[in-house]
Length: 246
Ligand code: BV8
Image 1: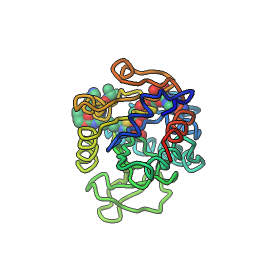
Image 2: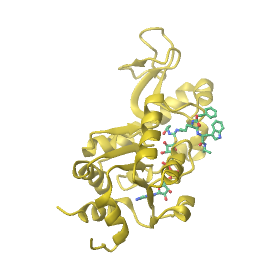
Image 3: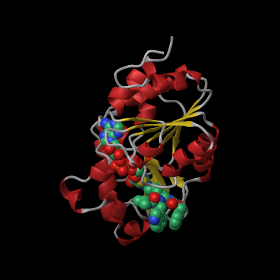
Image 4: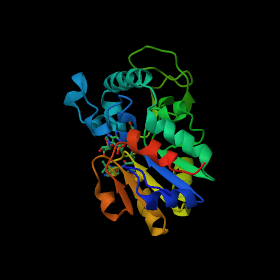
């Protein structure tokens, strides 16, 4: 198949021949929607904080009102964002392939808003709420500094996976299974630093899948990947999807 300016012919052929493609996305795929990446997200008031110090249960216990202020700031930011060409291309790809498993580390819901129907939210969703005490999902319409659970009165927390917390079994098993079973693994817009998500590419490689990275700043994964495309997701993904035969 003809290559495009960004996509090598070998990757086009691998995509065309793949029975099962597994995609892992990170904060980089939402960067072109105006949602800053996790590591350079912090602006204004939040500039003084390292997100890894805020996205932890200990931080929530220490100062739940501060953590809620951070998540409300991020929710507003995400609600103002729109899916970009990268999200939309992956939604198109889902309907063009025999089987695509989309795993995202992002909590912004932009893949679903772009039309992707099956999304494994490996780190949860920023708009979900959960009781910090009982762990059950709750829906609270409250602008209290720290919403409380209608069931037990305990603090409500955002339904995301914090550092030091385990990935929900369903998401973990589905993602690990897809990485081990796929024949093409695409790592898109992630620094490949956060585990266990960053281990998915290794599982795919060990299972003899072809591995490709799309990231304007090649990561350590680029060294072992079969293809490393140093480009933005919003430019590379539409070319990749358009390279498929009709
Ligand atoms: C776990 C949800 C088992 C919250 C997130 C010590 C104690 C406990 C655990 C650990 C420990 N040491 C290490 C660990 C494991 C830890 C970990 O991996 N830490 C790292 C930092 C070393 N992992 C965990 O804790 C995980 N759980 O291990 O459970 C356990 C349990 C207890 C004790 C031990 C083990 C849970 C991790 C989940 C954390 N939650 N998010 C929230 O969002 O508020 S992680 C957070 O980072 C986001 O989800 C984000 O997606 C994710 C990863 O970052 P990236 O997506 O890669 O984003 P980043 O900004 O880094 O990079 C963006 C990339 O995009 C860049 O490369 C850039 O070049 C590129 N880019 C930019 N523009 C574009 C682009 N690419 C394409 N196109 C563009 N236009």
